[in-house]
Image (tube, rainbow, N blue to C red; front, side, top):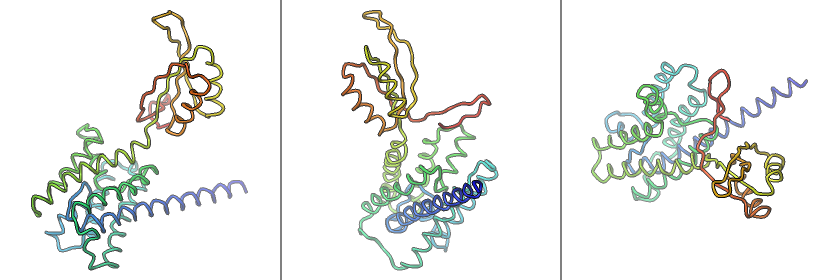
Length: 295
C-alpha cells in the first residue's frame, strides 16, 4: 500500500512538473512571437537565428526553430549521451510547437508596441521569467544551451562566456539581412538579455557565507542557527591580532531569506558581534567516489 501511494505521489509530482515546465515554455514562446519576431531582432536564441533564416528558407519561424532544435538535440545526444536530460528534449520540442500555435491563431499579427526597441525590451523581460522558472527546475529551453555545453567541453570555455559568444554570433548574423539599426538592437539586446538572465536566474541562487565571532553568545547563536534557522554551521578557531585571544568563528551558508532572519537575530541578540559576509554562487558536496554533486 505504501509503495502504491509513493508511486502515485511520484506520478503527481512528475505531472505537476511537466505542467509548470509547459507553462514556462509557453511564456518564452509568447515572448518570441509577440515581441522578438515583430522586431526582427536576432537576440541570443535559436528563435532569433530562425528569424534571420526565414529570409532564406520558405518555412515558418516555428518550423525552422523546430528543425534547428532537433539538429542540436541529435548533436547533444551524440556528444553527451544519456546525460542529456528529458527535460531539455521536452522544452526544445514544446517551444516551437507553442510558437506555431500562435502563428496559426494570429496569422496577421504585427507588433504590440510598434517600436522595435520596446519590442526587444519586452521580449527580454518576458522570456527571462519563463527561462528562470525552467532553470530553477533544472531545465532549459535547449537551443544555444547545447552549443554552450559543446564549447565548454571541447574548448574548455566557461559556460557563461560560451552562451555570450554563441548569442553574439546569432545577433551579428542579422547583418546578412537587416539594416544597421536592427543589427545594433540585436547586439545590445543580446547583452541586456545576458544581464537580465544573470539577475533573474543566477542572482536568485546566490547564497551568503556569514562568518560570526561573538564574545559571549557563541553557543546561543550556534544553537539558534541549528534549531531555529535549520541551517548547518562550521566552527573554526580564530586568534585576534590585537588582544591575542583565541575565539571560535561560526561559519554558515544561508539563502536570501535565511540571511535576513540571521541579520535580524544578530542585531537583536548580539549587536556587538563581528560579522563578515561573502556572496557564494555555488555550493557543492564531493563524495568519496570523486563525483561532484550539488548540495
